[in-house]
Image 1 (tube, each protein chain N blue to C red):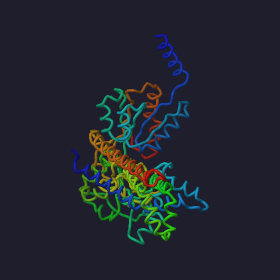
Image 2: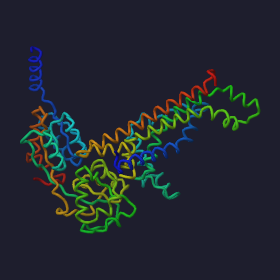
Image 3: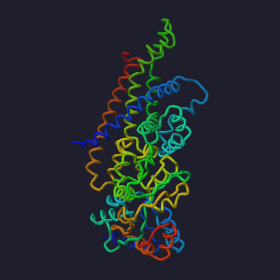
Image 4: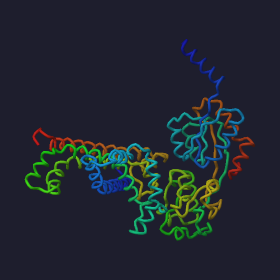
Length: 232
Length: 249
């Protein structure tokens, strides 16, 4: 049904989104933890900053990435000099753009699940002699895990759909940065490209639907697990 | 019935009293020049045309989907043909307006020297860098670019290094910012940006002649659209286009 070119586009999209989410996961969890439990000055500001990519025009995010991570940008130059890594025009750049766009959704889902952890269970662990790290590892983390996975899947879905920041930052290179949305955009401009648009759009919708259902069912399970009372 | 008459009268009254600004969809490479022409038209007391710039391919698709615009200026004949085949143009309004050339550009500070000729060492000049150009599958500047590089026998060697912009100005911006060491744009685009310099001019024989046709759209009901189309062909407008580096038909 799909041509090998189209399979390539799907595979690239999955790779970009997967890497984006794996990279963001620990960062998002740390931020979610701070926002759920932390008490520090500037928490409101941090909260707003984390959510910024959700509301700022994606083309602004793409432009900022371009001037920071481009070959002439301060971060881009440093990455190149220190580690020999270039993200400009590379699929890694597409992953970076996706990661930033997915971060707010991931932090939101994780924060809810961390806030839902019954703190009496943590207190009980402490009275039984567990240290803070052991309490986190054996109580807090497992209880919030379904929410963490729900957030990751949601972020994955968001990152599959990322368009504006990506095309602004790493342009539209077949096999390198041309993910599903960019391929659909390019095919839209081809006379007779409608069939390809329809196929790729169908895949986009199917993948998103799958991810949303998975994320929602994980979130529900998480609620049952960590929720204080209904049989946890 | 009475309602229809009243509606018609109100429309006629509005058209007479308050001419509506025409909507013009134009190739991205016309940004500065067409804006200047529209300004001149407005200074003559006409409503200022509303200009929307994008890749000709993107605009053609929008028109085919029923975009409520009055005029279309394309950067190649093919997209105009496409709309003609779909009966989206008003018969007898299509005119070839301008011509352009294709150039190889580099960032202004670049020291690259290259003569654009058959088999020229473009891949070596690029090194690991990218060649910025508009999408060669659909956008006119990219299509001409691929045609020229193919004719010169170097396309297959650089094909994998092309960074595709969604229109010619996106490609121009990549070179202007120094993200791509070389790029292919129209001569007028290179003229519009002080941050790039022309490395070489593509031989006119290496690609189809670059022509910009204009036409009024079939669904345009605004007489201002036709008036502005005629103004585009006037000596005054043509002098402006020439000032921005375009050739005249």
